[in-house]
Length: 256
Image (tube, rainbow, N blue to C red; front, side, top):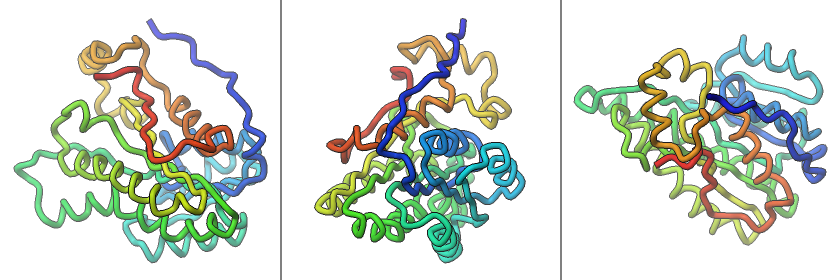
C-alpha cells in the first residue's frame, strides 16, 4: 500500500531571488528540482539535451525559469550554455549536478569508447560545471554545490559497471572540492537517491517482481517519488544547511 504523497513542504526565505543552475533539468528528478527551486522564488536555469521536454517544463512553470539546450558531454557547449544563462539570470550561487543516465550494460560488452562515453555522461561534466560556476560563488562570498550520487554501488547492484563506477567517483569529487572550496564558504555535498520512481524507471525497469524485491531492501515500505530528492536538495541549498558540507545525504528509504 502506498502512502499519500506529501504536498506541503518547507519554505526557505534564503533562496528567494537566488540564481540556481541545474544540469539535466528537463525531466525526471531534474524536473522536480527545477519545480522545487522555482517554488522557492529562485531564479532557475537548467541545461538539457531534450528541447521538447525543456520547452514544456518552462511553459508549465513559467516565472523566472530559463534553459539552454546542450550536450553535457561537450564541455565547450556546456560552458556556452552556462554563460548564456548567467547573462539572463545573474551569477549562480547554487549548482545542482544532476544529469546522468543509468543505461544497463553487460561488463563483457564494454568497449573503451563506451566506457569513456559513460564517464563523460555521468561524471566529467560535474567537475567542469563546478570549475565554471565556483568563481560566481567566490565573488558572492559563498554558495552551495550539490552533486547527485546513487546508492546503486552501495547496494552491490550489477548490470551497469560504468555507471556505478562513475557514481562512486562522485563522492570523491564532492569531498575534495568541499576541501578546496570551503575556505570560500562554498559547501559541497552529495545527495544519494535510492530507486526513484521517475517515468523512465517505470517504463524500463519497474516490473512488479523488481519492485517487490526492492521493497524488501527498504526499511520504509513506500516507493520513492522524485519530489523527495528535490526537497533534500532545496534544503542543502538554503542557509538552513549553512554548516553542512562534504557529506552524503541519503534519500533511499533506508535501503540496504
